[in-house]
Each structure stands twice: as C-alpha cells, then as structure tokens.
Image (cartoon, rainbow, N blue to C red; front, side, top):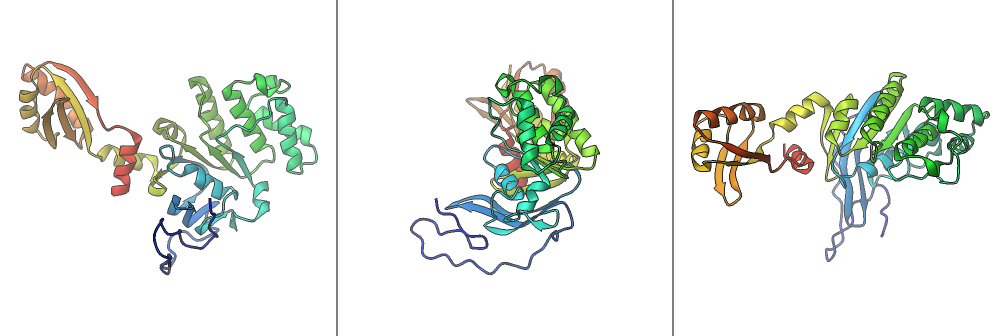
Length: 336
C-alpha cells in the first residue's frame, strides 16, 4: 500500500495516465480554532481507495454522534482527529492546533478505539495507572482511582481484566482515556457488544461527562444509540458527509425519504387500486413477491392502510419494509 503525502491528489486509477490535481477552490466553511474539532475539506485515501472525501464540519462542546454504516469512513475520521492519521488533503484541527504531527494533542484527548487493547494479565487498576503514568501524571494511583470511580468499576478494580465482561472492558478503556482529564473524548463504536443495561449505563456516563463541559464525539452505525444520547449528529456515508445538525432535523430528512413496503393481503390487486386512489402512496406494483407499495409519508400510510383495507373488506396478512436499511437512508441523504 502506497501512502500519499498530505496535500497531494489521489493517485490515478490503474491504467490511467499521470494524475494532475486541479487547483483547489477557495476554502469555505469553519475556520481553525472556532470549535474544539474542525475538519476543513479533509480527505484521506489509501492507494486508490478513498476512505474520507472532502469532509467539512465542526464539533462543539456536548455530545456529537458520528452516524454511518460499517465502512463509511467513521474510524478514519476519528483517526485523523486523534492525530493518528494525516489527512491526504484539507486540514484537521483539534483545539486550534493541527492534529497531525503535534504530539501535545495526546495530552488533550481521550481515545477509546473500536478494537479492544486491554492486556488480559493486568488488573483494571494497573491498566489505568499505566495510562496515567504515560500521561506524566505525578500521582498516578490517585488519578487512576478517580477515573475508575467515574466509570463505576471500583469493586472490580483489582481483578484481572481477563475476568471482565465486554461492558466492563469498555468502561475500563474509558477510565484510561479519562485519567488525565482531557477536554475532548473520541469514542469509536463504544456501545458495541454491550447488553441493554450496559448501554444505558454508558449513555448516562457520557451525558454526565458532557455536562461537565467536555466535547464528546462518538461513532455508531445504530440510529437508536445516536438518537438517545447525542445533541448533534454527523451522518457519514461512503466517506462523505451526508447531513449534519440537530438530530430532530436529520430524523425528519430520513423520514421524508421514499420507502417501499411489501404487502400481502387477501386481494392485492384491489388493495393496490384502493391505495392509489388515496394520497399516501406514490406507486403500487404487483409482483411475484406480493404488492410493492412506495410512499413518502410513513405516518399517513401507517394510518390509511389498515383503514382502507377494512373499508374494502380486505384482510392484511403481512406488511414488511423492504428498504429500511441504514444504507438506503444514508444514500438518500447523499442524493439530496
């Protein structure tokens, strides 16, 4: 794999001639230093693979969710913000300083990666204490104890992490990320593998940390997780920023996209004609799979379908969404 130097254009596809990047247009969007985290036309590619493409956004204090399907580029974006990856083009600034090649940023962020990196032979206390020592904290024992109290793992602090559940390992990683009291927290899929009780505990913990004034950016591919904990949302799809802002506004955009349902009834042909006479359905098509119904008004469709079927004497056997994947929702946001 050939790594491109920051500022160079993407490499040519196989068989193409020499790639000459066009001159970049004048920068637009946020200026460095105006928010704790700023990406300005940031891109990152690996050989011919573009993982992050011309992304611009700001992240302020509070909790922001980085939402997108697996492979969308979320981890690459977090890696650039953490200073672990250089942008191939554009800029990434953290607390007013370039994130790449500024080791001081590691003193000001707490990072919880998606892949666990907890040595199984260490106790939770020892793992967090070593993290404190790496940060140069004079009283590493006291700092470790305080961080472990924050994540509510005091009773298990002296146990080997090999005995921890998935949720406990996530929390001890968070304690290690918090031990030096950083103003910015970056968490990559922090809810992965957690049971419902553990998820609620993590959500409450993140809200409390944000209430103390921290900037928290976490990634997730699950809509419900972001909706329940984030103040703002950044929707990433295929390496691009598809939407950003208040979650309620993004949710409305998602709901407004066309949806397709497969319907099985006692009389699909008559039901199709009845639905098309109303206002909630854009199209209805009979196929071997059943009746395919397309709508942009989910609320009205949900109310009218059973009412119209009852009025027409038609029995409904199944109503199933056929395109409710996150990928279809995010692709729709990109096309907007």
